[in-house]
Length: 395
Ligand code: NZQ
Ligand code: ZN
Image (cartoon, rainbow, N blue to C red; front, side):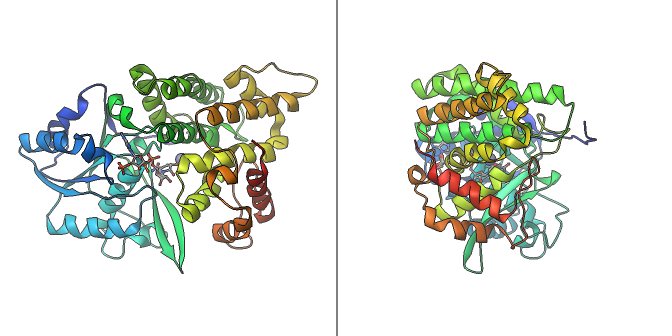
């Protein structure tokens, strides 16, 4: 087990109706002039923005609004948000939405206190030292940003759109309001994308070279098994509250690092996916559904027993002691079946990606000597192979 420091001070308000206390909660954390940040339409259509605004105003809070965050959020709205917060003396940001809105809020919160161009922080030219407090009303179980240290923003670099993540303790939100009912308006495809992202956050941690981390291995498997049971339930019945609730909390546990704090983590699949969503503007979870199983097949030989264990403990596959590779492959196929039946793409064609673009995807990921991953370190040739396997998979 590796040494670690684990501090996640987010206050979670979970369950039905919690968003109606948004005003009280913001006040508790010192908000008096709050920027309510949201996406393009869902939270307006559902009346959630009106309800949250009413709750804030009822608590005597001045509300400033900034909507329009797009999935795979851009830096342009972050600049606008920083200006707005400074002009209006905003002292807290309340993100109402999913990972994209929360990440945009985190970037604005960091940028307000930074003297130069906020992108310096994401480009790692400067280190953030201060941030506005951020809270969220979560409307999709997926990215885990409501309890994570990271934010991911897109930005044009020499004409190429790049997605960059910034990890800092300052990004950990002060609170998260999580009512599973708010996720019932999600289209099935977005629900499935979110579920896939949740599972991948666990798998990025589960496939590790760190030995003797039984407790977190078991936590990872519990989250994955929960997702295996709950995803088909929620696809069948979008109003299944208990399934929505289990998935929502799984999303937080999957990415607040509870399940991976003591180990070396991989993250190659995520970084390869970020190239797909930068180039095609696809949903992050959809890109992961295509990349992750291909990555699993490619790296499996590095530790076949680990993949066989995944197959047995998560999907209930029968262990073949004479040929564990068969078991390992069965586990990967079971994962693809789960995701395919939930409506997720499983190859480039279904995602809307093109095999001809692989050289561009690989060029965009970094310099010639760039590597990805830790479970098995992949050079650019190997990264190319993973993309090719993802492209060629026959559904
Ligand atoms: O913009 P609106 O109209 O709200 O529509 C959104 C959006 O189109 C819609 N939606 C959200 N809640 C809804 C709803 N539609 C109906 N009913 C609701 N209740 O869903 C779409 C997707 O929203 P988005 O916020 O983009 O989803 P997600 O939470 O998956 O976030 C994805 C972003 O998070 C980043 C991804 O790269 C991507 O940019 N990630 C952030 C991480 C973090 N900060 O820790 C980690 C992740 O690995 C990930 O990289
Ligand atoms: Zn993710």
